Picture (cartoon, rainbow, N blue to C red):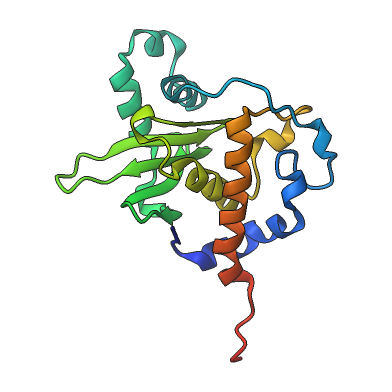
Length: 193
């Protein structure tokens, strides 16, 4: 996993160093016992639908839309030119923005040589989901790391009782550790200077 354009995140990521593993699920300065870790995991296609609603897609239009079209619509909102992380597998993690420029989270996009890119995961709002064909490849960890680096935290930190599935809680911790490792390069002074 490689952080692209690391200097872009010097300011936005500085606050992450005030968080430790103990309170990654709830955010800085909060009691870790406030986190709920017995929720059901998110469904990839449901998170795609929620992302389109957040992007101001009319509910009536969304209701008539086929699942594959919903996935393509989300893919059109991914800002690949602003990719945050490149995985060793060729998957890019990049921001998702509404057509009005509102940040909606981050997405994992598998690049194909013929140009037909594939949305394989997303972390939008409080929901993280990876397509079933692409699970157990570290994509959830990379999405979490990118959300922490790009957004400076997790959207669940704003909830009264941040909630996660057991696997989701583990992924948040792995993503936090990955983000800190990637950012160490940015925040470590150059000893030769």
